[in-house]
Amino acid sequence: MSDVTMIGLGEMGSALGRAFLAGGKSVTVWNRTPAKAAALERLGAVRASTVAGAIAASPVVVICLSDYAAASGVLGEDGVAETLDGQLIVQLSSGTPDQARELKAQAVSSGANYLDGAIGAWPRQIGGPEAGLLIVGNEDVFASAEPLLKLLAGGLSYVGSNIGHAKAFSNAGLAYFAAHWIGFSHGAAICEAEGIDAGTFGEVMAGMAPFFGEDMRHMGRVIAEDRFGDPEATIKTITSDIGWLVESSRDLKIGVEFPKFAASIFLRAKDAGFGGEEPSALIKVLRKA
Image (cartoon, rainbow, N blue to C red; front, side, top):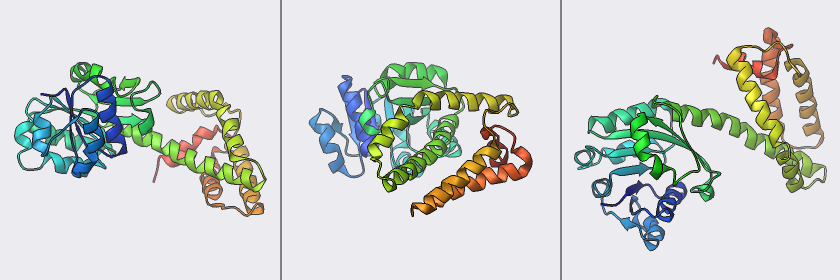
């Protein structure tokens, strides 16, 4: 028996496998394209020729595939169900809360324990202190797996028993980062058009990290407590400011898709009567389709 089996050897799955090996664990690996196992085999991993063999090889099976459909397909392959009784499945693929619940039901029906997780890191960060990993599921099951999972991320956190909540956090975070990536790229385009180095822009924004961190905590508290009426900046003011962002982008002859989209959301909130409230009052119009 090995300590852990790794199913899925893309960039992230391979990074997870390397972290287990670096932590001194014996690792069995499986990937539908066997050649992807070669790098980990050179580091000491053992490649299984079948999914059933890979799952039977270890008491803990970590899955990191493209999505839940792929994971469900793997667990549904011939001979796999018979190997799952008493095994721990840790699912780290991307997807939705409902998909996490469905995969848990599939695994549990064959006698497996199940944890679901969300990775907050780039592959290069896996195994280090800056990597984050949220895990949900039975608390006792998590406690038994915690020393092993700690090898993957210094920022390992257990966030409760609701099996859908890891993916809820993941998708909520993705909402933030999608705007972050687009917004930063738009800002870099502004800087380039004005002859400012994008690297300098990155350093300036990184220097504002404490402000952004506190602002996120503040917005979370304001929304949770439903207290939008004591603003330091208002939706009305920011709607006007984003109007200038649209005009500036046009003047610089760069794309206006992102600022126009942002302006439309703020304008919806202003027209709905929330113009004098905190920016986070945007949630009042975003709660409805």
